[in-house]
Length: 593
Picture (cartoon, rainbow, N blue to C red):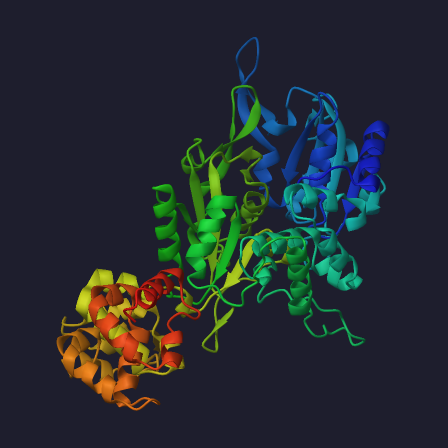
């Protein structure tokens, strides 16, 4: 979030630079500390801000010993090479962000910088440094260390800041120019202090972003394990009732009064496709949390490919090392430069998919993502052409079982503009299965929709359905396609009805209705006003059919739909995606249905 000077913080920055003292700044996440540094230092002519996100550093990033040839005789000697950013060739202010989130080795290096403005054999003042600052959120829930050494603390001046010390209101007003946010700011100011800390200015920005895009405002609240609750602590220290629904409704009302179209829907059809398209259009980082096997990754790749014409840059966190993203290497001018992975280079449009986001291989690789998702840079280098970042992860529990995933801190989770939780029904993978596997997929989906209960459908993921389809006819029992739970047990879903369907048991679908259209038309005409078994059958078939099936049998649909009771026909337009709504509107408006 870019913002102008915050009065106290800006004055503190100027004072520390003038006096040559190290400044330490503590404040809650998302209040604009880092952004204030970027904006205020930029106002000093000829001075550069060197931004170093400490959470992303590995021990060899700042300083490393390397053999170099000595001038004169050319003999190889061992020299300490320093990070290239610390030799910018002009006066600079060094900002070490997230300074408490670095590991123990990095903490030692940072302390030398903070105390003496030196690093190894290098004097930062001689390199042009005119100011050193360390920033972070002091909460033990979000940091890896505590600064307790009095010898270190005695070398710094420390300022604690809150949202009042940064001009975040002016920044949001500039970003959402044309929308009067006065009412939104009034709602925020009326909240209890605990709730204001949770609904940080950064999170409030995301809430407004989601509202103006037509999404639920709740998507702007970060996902830690579950959605962040906006609750105050009671006398016993436990959080009270979640006030988020009421607060978000008030924000939506204020945006509406300001002339913005903010529907704040409770449900969004085809949510994943819509949020990925919004991310590509508005340069968002988004987080999608959903159960395994529901098709998240497939849909995201498909949308990116359709919008950009290329596959996304794909990284699976369980197998991603720091070196897969960037690595420090010695250069000819005697500094350390970070080489970025080849896919990040170039100015062409690109999008990144961070798959299995909460299953990182190690903390170092995961820490790198904090810079990318917040600053859209890597090792201080801007990633050109980056249009969107989509992180995909599983929930901590599914079907009563604990999944082996890590917990995102609020600092990590609040970096995403939109964070949504999805169910398998939110991924329209059925059309893809039909397109790939034809009639067999239609039979399996009919079984999935009609023959098993809701819990059974949770166990039979879209990935499992594809295995069932592919194993059919290969002389293997279909049970082997189900999720194996250990000790000889598989997912508790009987497959007898599916086997019967696949063995050509008579079933009724659109194909069968089309083959005997006159008879079905006659049954519906003869049905009483409240309906009949024939009415229920036709309604079930039309309601469960995929859009491609409805279009393939459009004449049958047009002949049968007008004969159904009005209350059933209305269900085809409620809570469905735009494609289905267009189809049914065409049927009804044309007078055919």
